[in-house]
Length: 390
Length: 116
Image 1 (cartoon, rainbow over the protein chains, first blue to last red):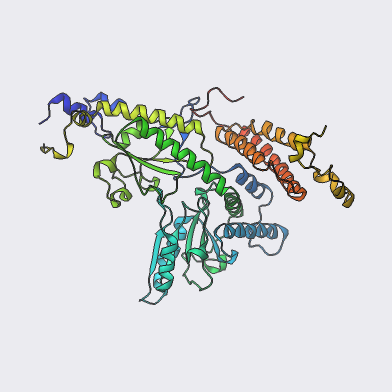
Image 2: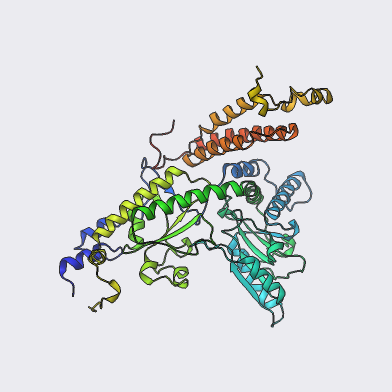
């Protein structure tokens, strides 16, 4: 049984509970709004949701937005030829990054379309006894790397098609589709400092993978994906891939140093913090931390100066805890208190330090308000409490 | 004045056999120590002009690390290639800095004073 002050404090430390008498709770909620005119922008720590374009990528794209605007499929004039040449150059840049042949790359509108193309139609065009395995290379919520090479070899030995969604992995970890024995791979432009609205699908030629196209039309991209290929976007994707290949090691080192700094500083300052996901088999730039006795959404709202997310952007509309965390066996209450820190090419040490400082400050503040935390401090085992129902 | 301490910056100009080989190569990417240093200074100067905090800090860091990484390069061909790359990057930075100014946004919370 909880008395009135205790119940008010409990409700006050949770977000999303509406009660007109609880002005304390209301002041903790930051309503969705755009920034004011001279208000400083929050610093960006959500690199898994999307990445800013590298200036070199924009520089490569602009000529095709301004003067070289031809349709790459026009065969009869210089506008078409120069646009096609740019598109094919981009195709080669994408192929080189993953160790493929340019003829094995199909431009799509993004990794989602590539995923749909791979999975939906493939199953229906092959014999009923064969099947398809589809695995994410690097998870977007906790950053864990899957053993793709081992899975690939296993699938090849059993004559099963292997697709991987490499959106979070391309350009961040070395990829070779032949080493890994991958048959289909989805690539997303805006996850590797390229433009939004473009992606690619890698389709192995030997042994040949046959898929039925999702959209029919003028037969572009060898009939697999009709529709004019957007040259400026393709050029951007190509440039982003080339830059990623050059900068892979340098970026990886930079991101690792910053991620370690973030995790170590936070863990040294406050207790009861859990790093979700395998500590070794992971991409360092995706740090998912659970702060016990603090509700994730309220911590996000409190950290209004830092652009973060809890869970993934594609499921951020629902209030349910992350399915990924539930799948790896995280406690329900820890799953609710998880925050994902995304570190990337452009993150600075100052940004990490600022984030750590604010995070520690807000976690301490929220824990002060939490009666659960009070009980833990007094030595009560939360799990042994039998909550009564109202 | 060449000193013993800059043997690391092996120069096209000081290498007499190369000079005899192809005189026309001189005008393109002659790698004198002063030219490399001036290229570095120009890259740093232009990078400081980015109005975006993240682009500015990245460019400065990458330029510094890039030059430091290639400090001990001896091969004149590699040096030429690196210098040409640096010149191209300088052009990219200048263009992107201008675009950034045309479409600039407010500063981020982590910047101490408004960027001039």
